[in-house]
Amino acid sequence: MGGSSEVPALRRGLAILTAMAGRSGPVSAGTLAKELGLPRSTTYHLLAELVAAGFAVRLAEERRFTLGMAAFELGSAYLRHDPVQRQAGPVLRRLVDAVGCTAHLGVLHGGELLYLVKERPSRPQTLVTDVGVRLPAHLTASGRAMLAHLPAAQVRASFPAGFARRTERGPRTLPELRRVLAAERRLGWAVEDGHVTAGFASVACPVFGPDQWPAASISLTFRHECAPGGADCGATWPELAGQVRRAAADLTKLIGGRE
Image (cartoon, rainbow, N blue to C red; front, side, top):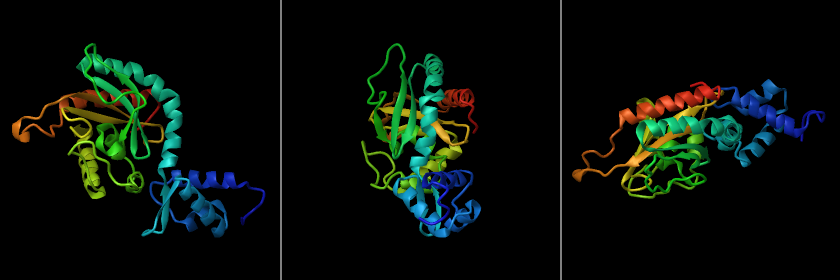
């Protein structure tokens, strides 16, 4: 490998990741090489390794690179294993007591939503969701609440195998998912109505970390039977969403996060 032998390859790779993390968008290999004082050949080699490991994504049309999902997962791991999971329990408990629905804390794991914490009302309903369960992120309100705040390249890289289905509802293609994410980003919260389990719906909002990226999400799940003809299908449930947004804002503050 080219470049100074005094600088270990690991340190160079971390320097590239740090430089990419400090940018608001994709960056070229040439720019990274110039900023870090690395030979272009070394920079391209390290970027190729980072892409292979999922820590970077190459945008062929733009000839630029951006962070991959593995980098987001690594960054959220600290939050997941330290303040977020520990601080979430009381926040979810207050939310459940206020609305009487089941509440969850979830995190992204590639193209899946992983449930870390679950709080139930005194008379819970049977749900497929539970601590440790993974579901396709694009079908869950929790997953989409976080995906809506990630760069388009990360969203695309999260679903290399396409879009799984559990019911007849939910995004089927990347363009469709992007339209849904854009609409929910404008709305301020994500909604799924029968995407995961028929007869149940959810609303969710993201929890932001100190780096302003979504570190987790809080959701409420409740029974919802669509009226004949689907007149009430796709309702946004703003009252419940308002409660979830306040809970997510509280948890964001507790972990030192910023929207």
